Length: 611
View 1 (cartoon, helix red, strand yellow):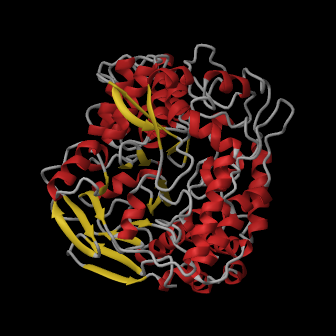
View 2 (cartoon, rainbow, N blue to C red; view 1 turned 90 degrees about the vertical axis):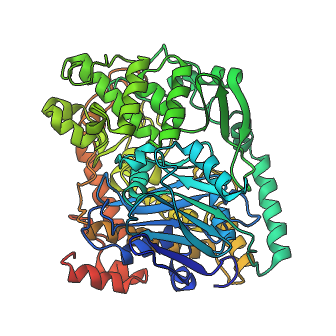
């Protein structure tokens, strides 16, 4: 494929300084781009069974065929590696402007392997690649790193993606950040960069993206932009972001948040996120080519500044019972500067506060800090210690699963995670598909599949295996095209498979149908599971936390309801059956892999004894 792609995938080995490029078309024919090409590169380049933070581990950055074009909301960069948390596929994505700039610089994807002898950053400009010394910016936060690199290279328009001290210290839930708040937060991608002594990647480019039917592509892109702009969901998110969606009134009405470390779903004292939005919002911002503008920029002198949206609001507020929104902004700023996943931080703070409340841990365990709910010192100082691996933070940096083992069985029983990945402080009874999506998805959280519908008091929280498969394949295709999920399938906006397929057809000159895109999504999802199986995953590895199973809800409109382990197990088996995977193990069957064009992968799994 020539059109829509730059045609080159960049491979950098930091151990020996080797830099090479290979043709994108050797990957794109079967895996499109973005998430799809990422998992193909990871499967090929990663030594099976290697430790995630080993120098020879692989970290891949991917754009999609629509990235950097006039198509709406195509500014996301997709990251993939073996996760230091789960030991299986780790993937996350970030918005902003870095992905289009990587493409304009001449490359569709970047794969990084090896470890530099000293801190470095990669500088890519118009196809030229340089590995530069980063010793002078090692230890700096993400904001300062971006400013320093731009000043050093003499161009304020350079786009930078970087890690903060948390990534440098290989905190297992370290994030990767670009701009003020566009973060790839989940599964520890920042720790991979730290393990490689890779501080940042700076990109700048002026290379055109060739489009087959430029007039048709431009006209249809404009049409889709206009359709999105008229949509009521777009109007709400563009004006208010998620501040109203996640405000205390809405959350308390639908009961989709959890507090007290997942023990309760009511919190009458919750602060008003929308009131904070109305009082302190500086401006609405967004990502490359996006008509949504769903991000909120705050700046309060002496408190902090950050761009934020979505789960960053309630994920820490409800988790640690933060009543003062100024503390929330201070925490958010700290997480972004230091490079920490806010969802993991919120979950771990709530867990520590429960342990302290119950006397399982004392101030002797917490470096003298009183881990009281909503306490500023407990929140800010403990988070700072996580990033710097100081005192208690050194233990917490290994992740909630490992930390809980040090505190004993009572602490382990209170830890809410999937294979070490802390869960968002959500009420899993409130969305019918969330539990199934969590246990069968590629990374162990509900956002990688079908959330289902907002549940009511009489609605069984069962989910649909068919709907889960449909959404997984849709999201895999959307991530591979380079389209934001929010403007794509998640929010129901008019930029689904039909629109994406037509834009691909106009842009590439190769006819694509919605069904064809879904076939790509299915192939990609099968390869992801094959990768995990090769790394040792089997059915039950993504176990739903005991606290959230077979326990009646204590309050709210779901009071008395519970998630039944037997029912969830039945749904999981049905999902595997419909996928064509082994019901007992979750391993994709040979005939299934061959059906989606992964014959070589089937042979590889068979040789390794995975059948």
